[in-house]
Image 1 (tube, one colour):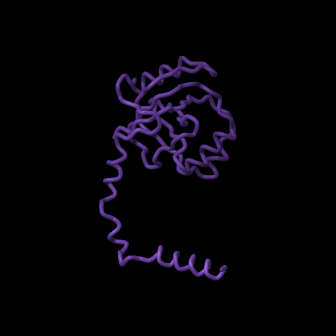
Image 2 (image 1 turned 90 degrees about the horizontal axis):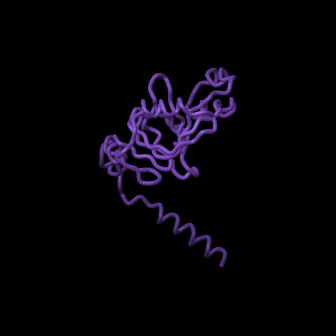
Image 3 (image 1 turned 45 degrees about the horizontal axis):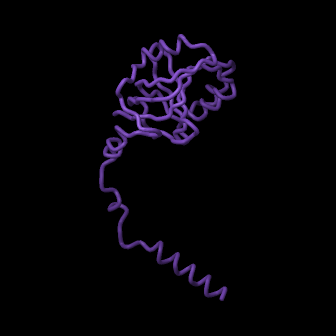
Length: 172
C-alpha cells in the first residue's frame, strides 16, 4: 500500500507540473505599465475617498501643534517619499519643508505596493507625535535599504510625526 501511495503521489506531481506546451513568452500579455494603472485609485484597508482630505501643508501645521502623546483623527493627501522595501509594511509621506510622517497600518492589516514612491495617496486614521528610539530608527533605515554607514550614523532618538492609517487611497 505504501508503494501505491508513493507512486500515486509522484504521478500526480509529474502530471500537475506538466508544461502544456506554453512558452514563458505567452504568459506576459500586458506591458508593465498596465500594472501601475491597475493599482492607481485602489484602496487598501477601509474605503477612503479624497472628499474632505486636507493637504500636506495643513497636515504639517497640525503635527506642529501636537505634543508627544497627543492624537487626532484626520484624513489628508500627500506624496509618498518611501515605502518599506521588505514587504510594504510602512511608508513615509512628504509634509513639505523637509518634514515627513511615518505611516503604519492599523493592526498590521494591510501593506502597500513597494514601488509607489512619488505617487499621491490619501490616508485616513490617527495622527500623533512620538519619540522614536535609535533601535527603531536603525530598523526603519535598514528596511529602507540604507547603507551600513548610514544606519550606524543614527545615534539619537528623534521626535517623529506618526500616523496609523485605517485606510489608504492610492490616487495616481
